[in-house]
Length: 205
Ligand SMILES: [Cu+2]
Image (tube, rainbow, N blue to C red; front, side, top):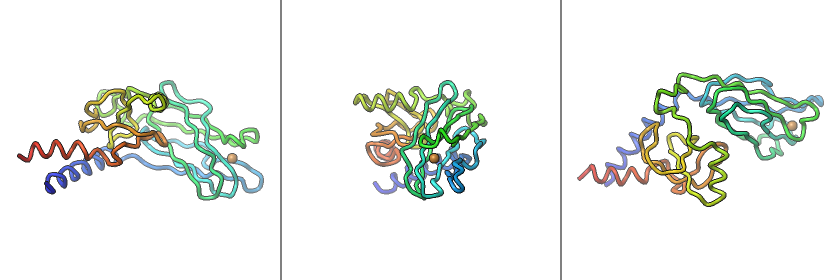
């Protein structure tokens, strides 16, 4: 029984590295020195699928709240980052311009822009890039109503109201417990391994 599981993990790791290898994580600092409240960089260009991490770089209270987002994408809002070193991340999957501000410092001009450029990964003819049947906000609402939401450990930004196969890696979709930072957190607490083990057991007979 141990070997099939190891194979499953190896396959999953391979899929993970091949599908996510190009996704990048960008940092945006939240600064307030000299009474100048700002995001740095104020404008950031990324590719679809990349993640942005906002870091509270000085002891002050900041937050990230979207002002305008592209059509077919969902608004976003971070919790309040109250101390230096606290951070919040969001994965951008839809190309377009996202304007945001810091809620406590909106009136003093603490604003930023994320420009998401569609990469080859966003080619919709590729089944791996099929748009999510549920937007993040819809997924969150369904969970609040105790309705099921499914996603894939390999593509946790993709949400579906029904179980089935992930369009990206074809692994069975897993039930989502909650959505955090735009990504699914699974009930099993594992990365799609539970169903794998069943499949692998059948194959190993
Ligand atoms: Cu601020």
